[in-house]
Amino acid sequence: MKNIMNTLFFIFALFFQAAIASPACPKCGDLEVPFPLSTNANCGDSRYRVYCHHGVLQFKSSGGFYYNIHSIDPNASKLIISPPQINKGSCSSSDLYLGGLRLDESLPFNISTHNTVMLLNCSDNLVFSPLNCSVNSPCRQFEEKTEEGNGCRNTLCCSYLKDSAMTAHMIRVRVGGCTAYTSVVNFKAADSIETWNYGIELQWISPN
View 1 (cartoon, rainbow, N blue to C red):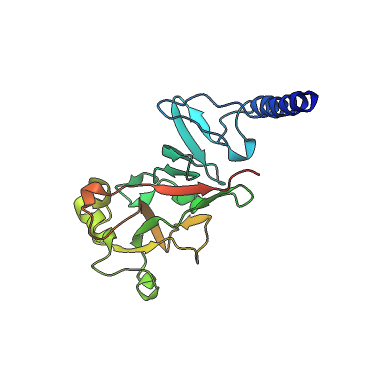
View 2 (tube, rainbow, N blue to C red):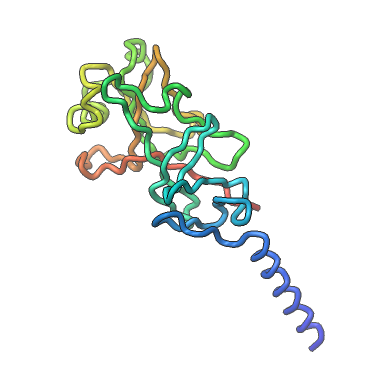
């Protein structure tokens, strides 16, 4: 009986310690903030930092740019951030001055392989790259059928699936290359553009 009581006490102590060490973070706007994501020093795991600004949950890049988080799947250890706004007059992404999206490689986040990235306003040099810069590239539909993409029409655009052979911590844009981008999660060629799920899916490594 004594051994059973000691075992139960030990299990209770472990649960109590875990509850103190990592309490659940409060909701941010309409979004739950599941463990291990953390909005402050008193909840979650500090390595999985996200930010709640005026009821909007955001992810910060290594360059200090904030991307809105619009969905989280804690069971799959994934979240989706909104692509940066495209400035219509110049066909440039709002994070162009930082070179695009860059993740801190020391943190447990990376860009998943479910993102089809569309690069816009590209230099002619990309025609010779392995990217899809053809008239059948989905980026053509984005330019022709969306208001945000209209400002990039009549320029070269290219698309690619962010696969495991590429860096998992960066989507690069630059003057002299491509100056804007967007991304669609789980893109399928047969899907109507009205059903595209715009976003950049990030995944995290679960804490030990």
